[in-house]
Length: 420
Image 1 (cartoon, rainbow, N blue to C red):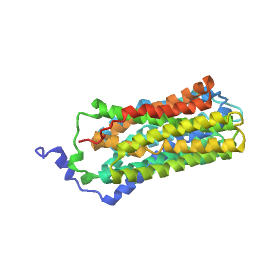
Image 2: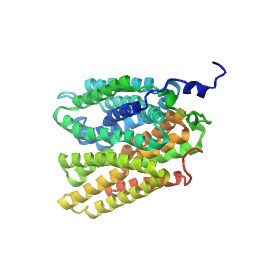
Image 3: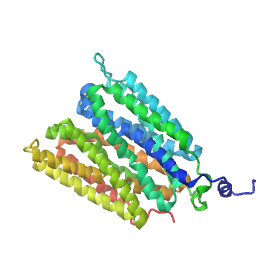
Image 4: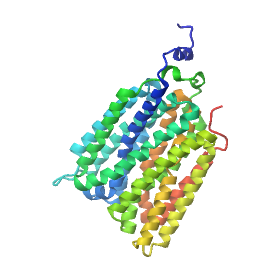
């Protein structure tokens, strides 16, 4: 047995049924949706969080960004552990621990009639959720890459990435209502239940594909951490996420403060952004699988997103004299929705290219690198945005979000990211 090369050993393992790949994909969707409901859904409660915890805008931005900081700091270690230990143990550990952290927030860090928890107690809990939830992306992404062939990976990864707007959309529908009616104990309790349910699915369905892997995908090059191309791609993904995070974290505050929009408008815009992003991600994954044009698609998405945010900034500036009129509210809400969808459409395509470049055996590490950059942006964007608005205006803030998209273009090389 010692004379048999490692790839041959792996290929001699009994192959799992190919149809099982859809169950694995369902686990990836459930896991990412559960964590996204917290990471992207909690910001939709920003108005209630500001009032319930008695925060100003700077403190609110810090609180909302700290979960992203936790993910940014530990996403790469989780990715390395995934490549070493496998998808199943990392995903189960991460989901179970995240559920426990959210349950702790529900019991010990939620405002009650007589007690308002300190900012730092809330911050500590949100950082912990980010640290533990950082396990989800790399582990689920590596599993999907292992179970699907290259001709389906763009679609599969895009479907998995629809879990982010799916979870955020569910959060936008449920969490503000829970915050208004029952408080943040119910908000954090519901999120804990979602993570626990995803962990149960992982127990039932997630396993190694065995003989489904091909020998060409078992190669281990020098490693993503030493590959400048992977780092450039990861940095580009991080920059391109900043405008999306600007929408997710402060769109409700913008519409409430700038346009005096009510909760119905706030909820409708955030749900429309997330549903639109889901459709756009699946369509983009399928389109680029068929045409092999992932690199060109990513560049076009960055350019179009920059244009949309510039248009949003221009319209917000033009209506600033009467931002609460029905026409002004409709125009800003519609452009904000369109910009948010466009800034969210490219994720599955980018992650597929990045993981393909690194190779399946190192996909966890590569995805961890990208998400360290992504969640660093999730931390910095809500922290910086209130200062930009205070120093200038909301229109300037949205134009700056578009500039971040343009800044990513030099990091998207004209040569394909595909490994040769």
